[in-house]
Length: 129
Image (cartoon, rainbow, N blue to C red; front, side, top):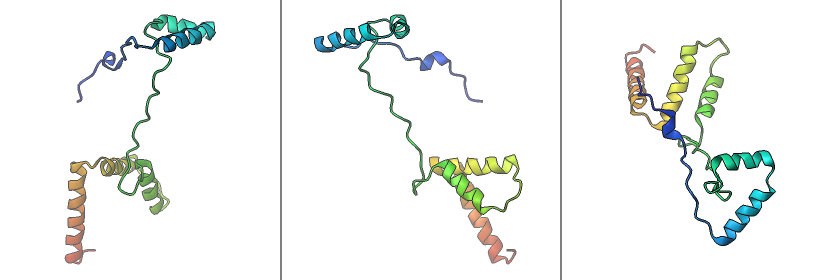
């Protein structure tokens, strides 16, 4: 089981931004034009810690395979090739796990894939398929 990590580890600690005099004047102007309920948020954070000029958060990298397909696209494409019948939850979970492994290049699943290919070829050579 994975170790539990306390949520406090992920909290962002406020830091005082260093601003130019022009930015400080603009900051004061922005603060004065704010609605009172928004101003409460800034007051709770602390005016000195508040940075109205901070960069926006960047989106998470979308993980894709070599063909620029996401995990969801791989799973959906595969499911479309199957006959329209009720698939078990375990079967669907296996598909999702395999698609995630392809995207993250997980060695465990690469080994499983290599074995399955080898076994399929073995059965073909023996005439069982």
